[in-house]
Length: 264
Image 1 (cartoon, one colour):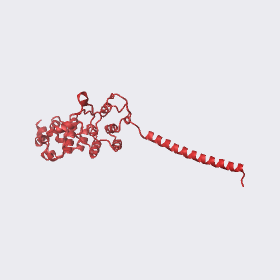
Image 2 (image 1 turned 60 degrees about the vertical axis):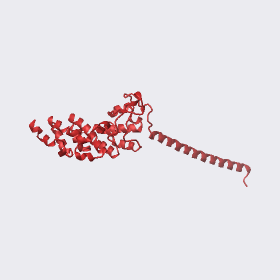
Image 3 (image 1 turned 90 degrees about the vertical axis):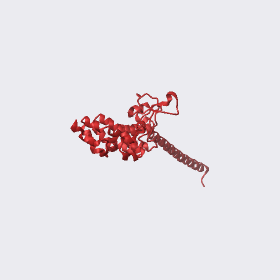
Image 4 (image 1 turned 30 degrees about the horizontal axis):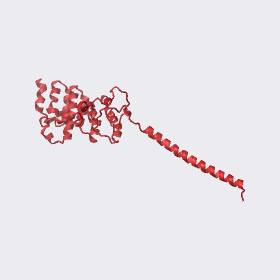
């Protein structure tokens, strides 16, 4: 039979073993919690409160990832970074979002200020960027524009809204186009607006990209582009219109245009 001293020693050893086991489990749990916290902090870059301020000076120095997610999306589109734009869009942002942050507006280079009918006085007028569609289209980034349209972007949600809504479509486009839904008309008009800028600059590469988005844009404002292209001798641009445009034979006064180079 064990004596009293041996019994006490055995009890003390058992208690120490239980305490050590408990301490190891607690330490392991705390370590796991700390590791998870570290992963959370590293993995989530919170937007800077300063960089997210709408009234911020456009000269402020803010990395793209310090802005709210919707504004990071616009900046990714402006840089034609489709993989990043795709990841950001998956986070549930509005594809037709427009930023009021002056830094973002300056960086995306598309400003489409808006009036808020629910506010009065100076607050009614608000700075606003264009939508992602506006930004990509203005740059002639065909792949980005096509992807945005596939994701449900509205061509009439931002910069082009007024011009689209004020266009008397029946006066300017072939009769068959009158049956097109509003979104298709909006795409033709918005691409036509940017195509007209490319024509003025004689930027054939950009015009080619725009016609790959919407070949019916050659009919912009009743065939207002091709006559000037021919008159000014922009032959590469003229060939591009005839080669990549759609329904060329339905261009207004098309047959008369064929003889214009011979008469001039």
